[in-house]
Length: 293
Image (cartoon, rainbow, N blue to C red; front, side, top):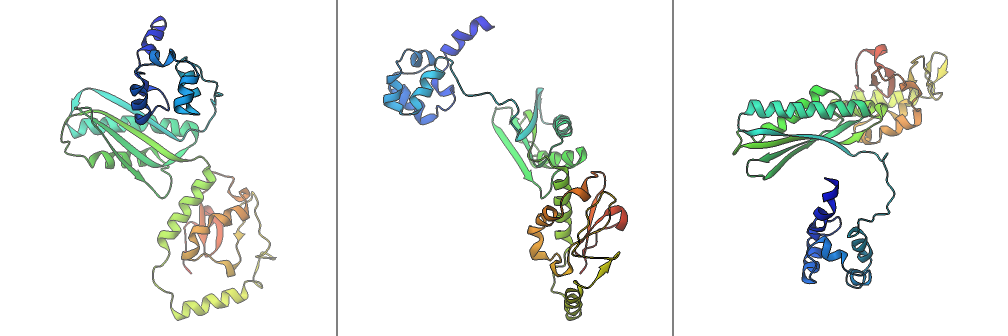
């Protein structure tokens, strides 16, 4: 109840307050300060002389004063949901059902905020109140509810069979990517990186590559040179000069191409992209991702 708040806070140990760590709490207890009420009885000079710049902070929080501006619109770094079971569970099916329900709650927020996380974490509180966490970070963002389900289930299954009863489970998504264009490009680049050949090209492939580099300035497409990059809403092809074709060692710098080309050609979020030998095309025009040299 509100009228009981003052008495409740007055009895709180100092270690419960923000920015009072274990070492500071030990030092305060050595000075005879055990609770918030003990700290509130001190003058401003008492904590300042013994804790330096932090002394003013301790003096203010003991009186419920915090002049920091409220930031209600700050960007969230994670989204999680937890549930406590009515009884300790040891049945994997029931535990997995709880994990899926929490993943659904997290995904509902992700869709509302248009955010997709690359890292999923499952938290388990056991019957003896000990905590365990399992986390996995992916190369690209999790783009579907089923994808989040699969990662969360894989993580919870890593503790099966449970050594003891499970009291509580939670699912968290983090490392958000809120830009849908960047998410799709990053997913494309990851796929290209996986499909690039791991062996050295043959001598014939090297000769063909050199010839394409020599002809890159002369090649004509629809009456325009490749140097004139087109980026229109009509989804016309966007060309990168052949002499700058994408190689395995250049995959890490591919987002630079997207920055140079601009986002005009990628305005339609429903249209996936493909990379074809250094050319960016809408997938509806090519039908596949081809990274052959």
